[in-house]
Length: 387
Image (cartoon, rainbow, N blue to C red; front, side):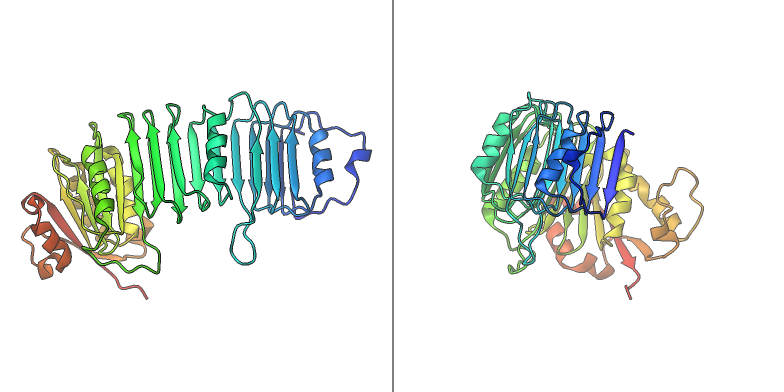
């Protein structure tokens, strides 16, 4: 046996008294199990070859010691309401920690200490961790070979500074209290961010995709045209100075008006004056797959600043055939249940001559104030009303 999965169980025996050892066991997963600190240590002692350990919603423990695990590569701790986690595993490559929520909806604080692991740690994921700026700096400085970093709802972090030539992928989501974030990663390939503040970014030419999704707290009311000037300046500086290598396009999603702007041609870029925007920089070759995810959000207008031999404009003839449930052939990836079975999209209207209530007022008014108005191709989407 090389894998053991246990769920909804309670450890009631003293495992330390048994002479049985699981020398071939490489993977252990406990879900919703009741196990004490001592029992957990005994389980680990009986499994000297363990490479993957997952603990999900386990009760009974307050302190987890994973020390001297010579072969451990992956440690995943999720919602276990621990006071402390101490890890010393010389070959640890991936560490994932998700903090338990209290009854009041807060995170249960847990002290995390990852001791020296021979610089093998390449993936760090913290969800809701009660980690301070200094603790994060100490942890990150200790492991310079981290290539994938995932941070979600770590709300004790106020000022985050990351400098790394090894980073390839960064996901940072739901940071409500962050005051400043600076990332210098010249070899980064993918960057995803969701939060209030515009991060200060210094990224290299190897970047393949970017997703920036900004939101305001529910207590703050913001209208189209209202925004913080420094935030807007930083955002414009980022998109204007980004190295759009061949094959990349910029997509701007205005969440206030449900309108989307495609930049296949990035020679001149204008960002809508909205505090609730999503910024996507992605390969043009995935336009069909991207269009499916975009349509699920029911946009009102899609405006395209096309390049020569535009891939985005080529999607719309196929889209119209899908609306009418016509056979598009194997080359059409838009023949989805979303369009066919539920028939939620009724019509796509070309707005090249405007009309249609002047492309719904506020969006068209803004477009007219920019040099884009005579260069974009716009399409209006009419959707069935949701019941």
